[in-house]
Amino acid sequence: MTTTPDYNPATYTPFAVTADLSIFTVRGGVLQVLLVERGGDPYRGYWALPGGFTNPEESTDAAAYRELAEETGLDLRALNRERSGSERVHLEQVKTYSAPQRDPRMRVVSVAYMALAAHLPTPRASSDAAQVRWWPVEDVLGEEPEVELAFDHREILTDARERVRAKLEYTTMAALFLEETFTLHELWRIYGAVWGEMPLLSNFRRKVLSIPGFVEATEELTEGSPGPKAKLYRRGPALTFFPPLRRE
Amino acid sequence: MTTTPDYNPATYTPFAVTADLSIFTVRGGVLQVLLVERGGDPYRGYWALPGGFTNPEESTDAAAYRELAEETGLDLRALNRERSGSERVHLEQVKTYSAPQRDPRMRVVSVAYMALAAHLPTPRASSDAAQVRWWPVEDVLGEEPEVELAFDHREILTDARERVRAKLEYTTMAALFLEETFTLHELWRIYGAVWGEMPLLSNFRRKVLSIPGFVEATEELTEGSPGPKAKLYRRGPALTFFPPLRRE
DNA sequence: TAAATAGTGTCTCTGAGACATTATATT
DNA sequence: AATATAATGTCTCAGAGACACTATTTA
Image (cartoon, rainbow over all chains, first blue to last red; front, side, top):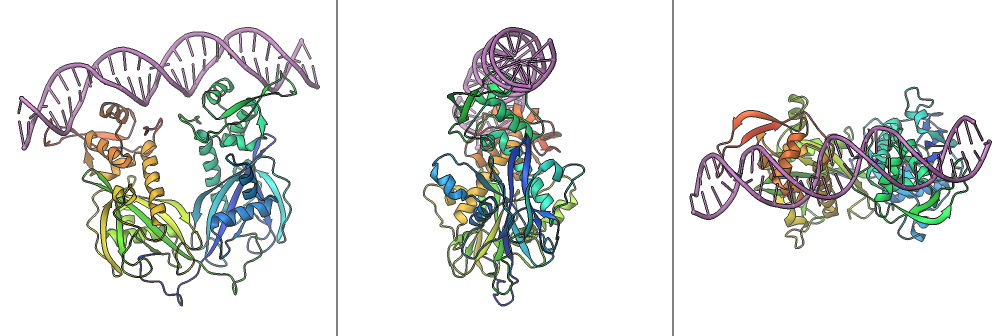
């Protein structure tokens, strides 16, 4: 914008702008991401990150929220508003991808977002998407991927996963993967699922409890499967902390 | 992109995509940013971040490099390539801004970058920019700003400054603000200029020297102004370190 | 001599990392 | 009984923070 003189509406090549989402959850102790199977060309039959074109009257943030709601069936903006203060779903912008040939049809600039949430409802297939399902991220980004992603979505997902991993080091977001109340053991397993490695549980407990506002104890106890009854915690008001938790 | 069905080339409203830059340097112990005075409407006479439209055949990264070269008169990609390994100028994407009314003329999505470098040549005015000059960031973002920025550039600059500040905590970038060789005292003053606060010099020295590859000692000494001759260092190969340096 | 700079040394306290230990519930 | 979980405790070591101290050069 702003300074260069070379804008001429008659000749300036227009861009399409999309918001693409890496929506993460943890199921069965495994980090998973929501993918849609493409029903049309290009990349028909490939899996892709959910996303869509930004409308003329909305920001890409709004487009991302809209897409998230469409894919998951939840109005997350309203959901976050209603429980003022502590959000249920976290959505944040990660990076923008703009290589000229990234979409063979036309010039598309994609603003990538990452979202994380607990127990989202089973997604419903949308009109042009053959399927929608959760994929273990390791099955997508691992050594021998079971899926090949469309466009540059493998790169986008890689960056988004790194963002989530990094954010668990110094934010309290991990608790968003869990229900309203949870045990420290469950929180610890979230870190394992996201990082692919676990800090020592005993040290992890000490660290989390030493951070003011990360978790707050409740009166309740679990009806454990194997093991003693565990104390249940809920999210505290803290969003970030220092010093961070460490990965290798 | 990718999944939603609602793209129709005949009706889809096009976006313009720009790359806008917060180019930082430290002069006279003060963090400064390069601004251009707008020569045309809207916001005629206001100051703005340098930037411009992305061309049809380039990425926004390429557009940012091009704008940086145009504003500073340096071909920074070539400069960085030629001294393989250690770059002279750092450029990185910060965030994308897309509020629908951010440019009154049309729908413009701006991908914001931040750059930092030492002693860039005095900028030359470009065709439609009345003036180009370095501004102390405090004069722009401080309590009583001396300039009002065009568009949402105040928000963009605020985010860019926070990015630089954060990056000095755990990267070796600070040395990019200095010449090829520098004293630890000079490096320390860079931190003061960027953070607006100084760690204790003695602790800072110990920390920097304890980080493998942050700085490498040379044989040379300064011809000091007041004070003893100081050892000169150059940048080492390390890019990041842990644990980080801390701000308040 | 004052002022700014250069450089070293020291003490304390926090907290991470690596364990060991004990107890409690389920299968 | 075996196993997974819950919870606490202990020891060591790295490193941040706060200072004191000395020395060197120029104005």
